[in-house]
Length: 324
Ligand code: G3P
Ligand code: CA
Image (cartoon, rainbow, N blue to C red; front, side, top):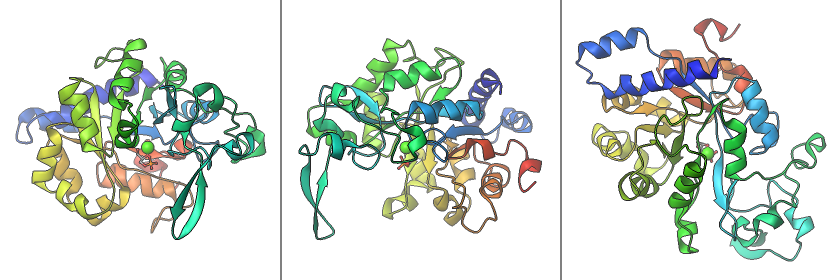
């Protein structure tokens, strides 16, 4: 697909939600509303081990507008692409480093955890991040953020997530600064630095985004993730959305929240925020017959601006594709 066309659409999308709902400009632009963005959640993670180069490559082959690296930090301060704080679910760390665990209490049981931040990058590079998913992917590695940026460069956008920044703060790491430094290394720290590789930083931590926007002064597009829970309703109110607009350009709610809170998409747009919900997976589409139908409902009925999916190949670009 034409990635450049998609990234241009993103710029139009940002403009569209930023203009006043009453203005004539809004009415004109809504007639040409840009296509929704396909964000490959952890890469094409429905078909390849999440957060590996294999998953990201496949996502781009399947037409992803953005690939999504979740970020963790090694003991020597390198950002890596990994969802969990620990390496044990998605690598063979327990086999390679059998003694390097921490013991924790979990649901009344003592469990062993291998924290990514207890390992150097060189050690992380020894791990197999593919076999747990399928033996076909044996030998896949945990990539660095830098490697993911290089892979995406010129082909797709990147949508990095600051994961558990407070945990890393307690360990003496400044995740937000590291992210911006890495982007600067690649010349991507300014908005629209490379239209073929737009950057959107996301986080469940409002504080992390506030640091990025106000303390570190980034102009990059920021998206605030909202999961279910007590605070969600407050964030999705007109007042909550106005508060989010102080530090972010969009929201990334769980898809269930948008079904529970009618009008949340329109309210967010009126507040000048884009809406990109997560996570759409084949075989887990709730009351919808297929994930294509589910994604089509969110895009064409609710009017979201994009979505995170494990199945980029099933993303409906037009209403007709759904259910066909
Ligand atoms: O970042 C959007 C979505 O990925 C949030 O959920 O847990 O998969 O990072 P998670
Ligand atoms: Ca994520």
